[in-house]
Length: 424
Image 1 (cartoon, rainbow, N blue to C red):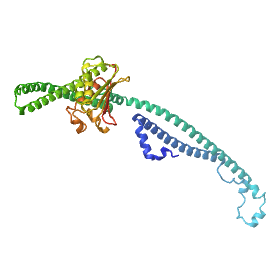
Image 2 (cartoon, rainbow, N blue to C red; image 1 turned 180 degrees about the vertical axis):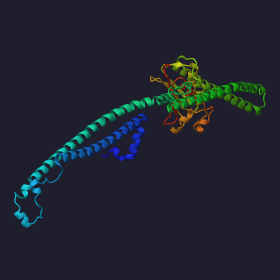
Image 3 (cartoon, rainbow, N blue to C red; image 1 turned 45 degrees about the vertical axis):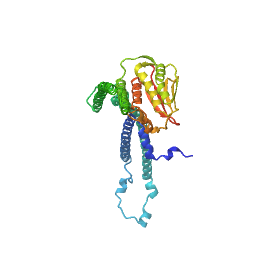
Image 4 (cartoon, one colour; image 1 turned 180 degrees about the horizontal axis):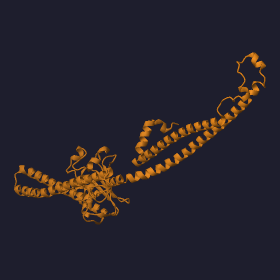
């Protein structure tokens, strides 16, 4: 059976391991590797020098005690004798014990010297070996200690970066006022924190300006729209020629849709600002009320609405929560087909789920549903609507600390799930 790791090339494996390591782990590994390489180089340098130095020292001591590998000096009696070249006759007529007897003391001295050299070499090898072993043990222990110290130092050095990461995770439209305000020396990490705070300043100004513009524009447009509707109703009041009756109805419908759009924009701006006052509210009761109010729309489109709820207490804004449920149910009824169904459920897991029938939806395009003024396809735009319903739902859920997810139904339609915390 093949090992899965054998199918991965070494460069790919190294890249995968490098990507899985945190920066703190990488910094610790760099500290440890640097210390280990420096310690290993120092150990090799000391070992080579110690070996060379001890060899020279042992050789010098041996030469001092043995006189070196030279032949024994002649005695005084033989120093006065004439030296004649060796030859057969001279060798035969020379008195004395013979060559073997004359070289025996020199051979013993040489053997003793060689024995001492051998012992010295063994002592040297033993000393060098012990030095290498214990140095390696010390190097390993110090490498572990340096790794632990490097981990601690990396943690202290990266503490401001950790604060930036945690602040970025907490950041949302509701807490853009928070700042890091790092203290300490004016180094790169302090500069990173100051840059992050400056970025939050720009974002806060941008969001505040956007919300103020939407709210002010919506308020300013409500008055002329109301005046326009009154003018249409008065100016085109009965009796009216038959050919102008459809024109009046179209103008009134357009005016009504514009008013709905303005009301939706105001609601979106209000939910984006967050919650001013909260109270304990039963979301299940609000959901049933919203379904009852939309029953006429469901009957007009021949859509059957079914509601299954259990009590769900939420601490929040009752008006916004009512709009959340109403927008979910209205969206499910509007973007449906005749004889379709809408199922509204609040289960024991404290989830509000709305599921409807309808055309099949591409899963890759579901997220765009929550963008303002965005719809998926022609079938979903062939109805009246302003494209803000699900944007309002997500904004209200976010203001209450909740989440909204959507998933297409395999047979067609959409399933939207809202999770809200029970306490804030």
